[in-house]
Length: 262
Ligand code: SIN
Image (tube, rainbow, N blue to C red; front, side):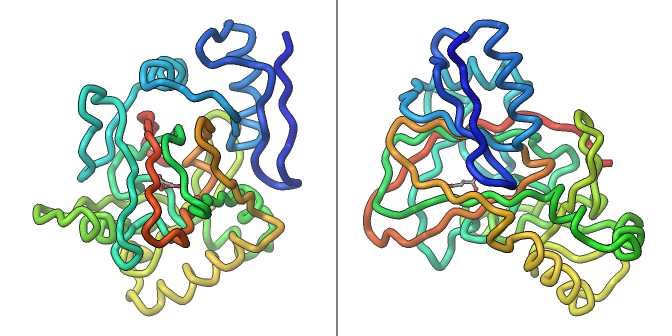
């Protein structure tokens, strides 16, 4: 097997080389799965994955699910195309997990780069490390809290006029496959600690966000056409940088059904 997995930072992310997602053996898949659980997000350069390849690869990890309020890509109901949205209204230029505002949030997201601008990078943070760096005393308190997540920013971006999805999840969730604990945070209007005022909640959540995304806890990816990147929403947050003005940007995204966070 030529497959090689190399860490991209000391904290989160790894590059996978020596493999074609068009013809993946079971042995290669097992190595990718192990690397994914270890590094939380993986980068495959130069794959140029057609929708069918992306879908088949994703299905090996779980059942496709389309995020509430997003429209599937025509001809490929398992995919959504993430395209340029005005900087003022985009919901993805903020640290977030995909769809924490539903009862069963997506566990994994997979992006395949179709059109990339100069800029438009995406960043990921390690939410295990964000939790593990805190003191025993604070961790014990956070372990008892829940967050009320709402899909307000996504609804605004999608001009969604129906009911705003909402779900309550633990602020610290245990990864069902690794057994490790990770912070599961919400942001400002999108989230409030259950039983706290919005103002009280903002103070703590903003502080936890700031601790989560310190430079030594993130990986920043510069996209090239043909890249495929996958990440674990149970233990990472991500942030799409909107610094590319009028240039087009399009990435096909697949998300996989997860578990009720616990
Ligand atoms: C997302 O938030 O799922 C999309 C990330 C990106 O556009 O880079």
